Amino acid sequence: MSESATGDALGVTDDAGPAAGAAGRAGRETDPVAAGAGDGTRAVRAGLPEPAKYEPTLPGPVFAAHYHLPGEPTGPYTYGRDENPTWTLLERAVGELEAPGRDGVETLVFASGMAAVSAVLFSQLRAGDVCVLPDDGYQALPLARAQLEAYGIEVRTAPTGGDAQLDVLDGAKLLWIETPSNPGLDVCDIRRLAEAAHARGALVAVDNTLATPLGQRPLELGADFAVASGTKQLTGHGDILLGYVVGRDPEAMAVVRRWRKIVGAIPGPMEAWLAHRSIATLQLRVDRQSATALAVAEALRERPEVTGLRYPGLPDDPAHKIAAQQMRRYGCVVSFTLPTRARADRFLDALRLVDDATSFGGVRSTAERRGRWGGDAVPEGFIRLSVGAEDSEDLVADVLRALGASA
Ligand SMILES: *Cc1c(COP(=O)(O)O)cnc(C)c1O
Image (cartoon, rainbow, N blue to C red; front, side):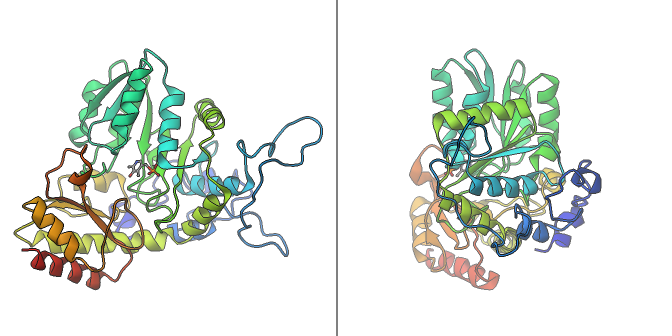
C-alpha cells in the first residue's frame, strides 16, 4: 500500500501535524532528513550519525560494560547499564519516526516491550494513585495490574472500543491506551481520550506496538508517552526482543530513565544494532504487509464459515472510522473466528505459508488460536493472523485453501 493510498488519501500526511515540517526540524543540525521527507526516506536514514570518512554508515554494535572514564564521572558514556552508543543511535532513530520534527522528545530503549511498559507504569505511579488500563489489551497487562495493586495502586479497567475508558478517568494519574487493541483490534480515539485525561490532570501513555510509528504517532495525537514492543513489526524478523518509551515531558522521562537504571532492563548492543538495521526496511515491510492484510481480510469476508472478522483497514470494520482519523496504515494483524476449536486447529494445521506461532509483525506470516493461552476473552475458534511479506496472491490462496481443507 503506497503512502498515497493510505496517509495522503486520509489527509493525514507528514505535514498535517502542527509540529511537523520545517520549523520543527530546524533545531536538529544532525538530523539529515529533509523537512517533509516521506516515511521511506525517514526510515532508511533514521538515527544515522553524521557521515565520517572511512566510517561505516551505521556503526556496528559497541560491546562495553564500562568506558574509559578518568576524573569526574560525567556522561555521556560511563557504565554499560546507563548508556551505550548503539542505543543512542537506535533511540534517535525511533524518536525520528515517533515524533518527526519535534524538539525535546526523548527516547529510551529497553530489553523488551514489557520492560518498556513496566518502566512507565512503575516509574510514574505511587501507592494511592489511580491507573486506568484497557481490559482487552496485551495479555501481560493483567499481570502488571496485579503487581500495581500489590503496591497499593488502584487500577480501573474499561474496554478499548467506544472510548469506554472515558467513563473511569476521574481522579486518575495515568491513562493507558492500547489501540488497535491486541488481539481484538478495537480502536479508540486517542485525541479525545488524551484531552479528557489531561483535563483531569492525568498522564497518557499509548501502546503503539501494533500500529508502529509509521501507522500512528501518539505524541502528535496528544499522548505523553508512546510505548511499544519492538519485538513485533518494528524489527519485523521474529528474532529479537526489544522495547521503547518515547516521551515529551523531560521530568517524566528522567524518572523513566532512572527506572531503567535501577531495574537494568536494558537491551544488548547486538539486539539494538539489529533493530536499527531492521528499521531501514520498516516502510517497505509495513506497506507490503498492510496491503496484503487488507487483501486477506477482503478474501475472508466472503467466506460463510468466518465470523467476527476484524481489520481496521476494512472500510466496513466497526473501528474504521476512528482508525482512519488517526492512523496512516492499519497494521498487519487480521482476526476472525471459525465455528469451533477443532475447525480452527485443522485450519492452522492446513496452512503451508503461515507458521502456527504466537507474536506478530514478522516478515513470515504467523497465526494462532488465541484461546490456547487463556486470559483473552475470545471464542475458542478465534484466530489471530499476522500477515507477512509473502506475495499477496500466494498468501490469500494458502488461507483460502486451508479454509477449504479444514471444512
Ligand atoms: C508483544 C506486546 C507487548 C510486550 O512486548 P514484549 O517484547 O513481548 O515484551 C506489549 N504490548 C503489545 C501490544 C504487544 O503486542
